[in-house]
Length: 137
Image (cartoon, rainbow, N blue to C red; front, side, top):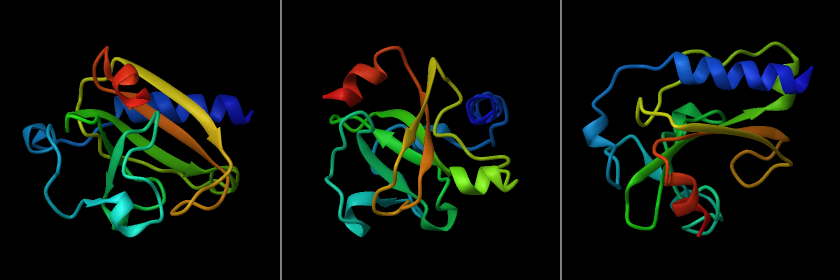
C-alpha cells in the first residue's frame, strides 16, 4: 500500500506543477527565499545522488528542494515526504517544481537525516537525461 501511495504521489507531483519563471532557477544560486541546505544544516555541500540542495525553509519538510549539479545547473527537484504524515492522511498538494521538464522520477525510502529527521520518501524529478549521472558524482 505504501508503495502504491508513494507512486501515486510521484505521478501527481509530475502532473500538478505551479507556474513560475524557470529561467531564474536554471542556475544556482536561486533567488530568495531559497537557502543552501548545507548553510543551515550539518550536511555536506554536495550530496551524491542529490547534488547541491536549496530549499525555502517555509516549505519544509516536503520542499521542493532544488538540486544542482557541480556546475550549478538545475538537475532535479526533490521532495521529502514523511511516511507517518502520509499514513495519517496528510496530502502535499500543488508542490512547486524547479523545471516543468521531467525526464525520469525516482522514489525511495530514507530513514531520516538533519532537516527531515523522521522516515520519509524521497521523490526525485530529474529534469534532463544526464541529470542522474551528474548528481551521482
